[in-house]
Every structure is written in C-alpha cells, then in structure tokens.
Image (cartoon, rainbow, N blue to C red; front, side, top):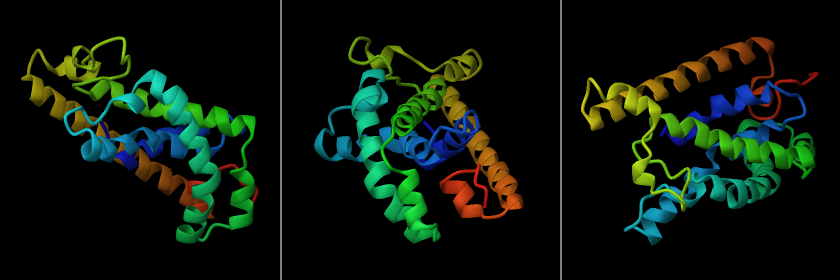
Length: 192
C-alpha cells in the first residue's frame, strides 16, 4: 500500500474529472481507510492492520461517514491554520452537500483502488472472501520472475515512485497557476 499521503495525487486527479467534486472530501477520503492501521495495532494486534475500512463494505459505510465528518469539522481548521487558506471560504466549500458526500465516497474508494494492485493481502471483499487469498495484480505480474515478497516490494516501490512523481508534477503545474496552497488543498478551479 502506498504511504498514506501518497494517495493525494490520485484524489487530485479525480477532482479534475468534474468541477462539482469536492477536492477536500476527495483528499480526506483518499487517506481515511488508513486511520484503522494504528487503531488495529493498539486494540486488535492479533488481527491484520488493514481490514474493515479497507473493505468495500467498510469503506462505503463507515469510511464515507467519517470522511464527511472530518471534511466538515476538521479539514477547515487544520488546512486554514497550516497553509493560511481563507478559513471562511474553505468552511463554505466544506459544508455538507450531496456533492461532498459523493466526493467522500469516491475518495474512500480511490484509496482501495490504489491499494488493490500492489497488496499481498487484500481485504477488499472482506468479510465474504479471506483477505489472504486475494493478491494484487501488480504483485502477481512480478511473481513468475521473483519470489512473493520480492514481487510485493517491487510492486510497492513502483507504486510509491509513480505517486511521488505525480505529486511533483501536480505541484509544479499548480504552482505555475499561482495561489499554490488554495489550489492544492481546496480547488484547482479557483477564479482567484
């Protein structure tokens, strides 16, 4: 799985597909499933650290609900404080609307889509299918030549490199348009 922040570039690209989508909700949704990792380590250490929020059912329900709540109540104070984005404007963009909910759902699902190809363990169909029986296609691609763990590490490295390069391209492109942090965390469609 890509390191949590590396899910951002995929969310940003999705936001470009429709101006009605909420970039804040897509961004929050794209990282939301990973909040279960430290919770699983602390409270359920005998279970895998990717389970409920990395499954379709968990992501579609609890993941989407948590994304809506975090986008509405935490995104504005955090992003406006750290990146000096206008708090009132950001608060208006983060109010709960049908498009914010749709964007939250898409953001959470984007996390699963990005994780799926390179996981050696996929809880995407949990609780119906044992997560240990689903190996990502990118891992399988390298398995004829490499051992299972080498194939996983190659798939992981390729995914991480692709997301880092994509994020750098996004930063350069939006920097050239001006108003970097607003475009990066709020909307690239600003009339500013």
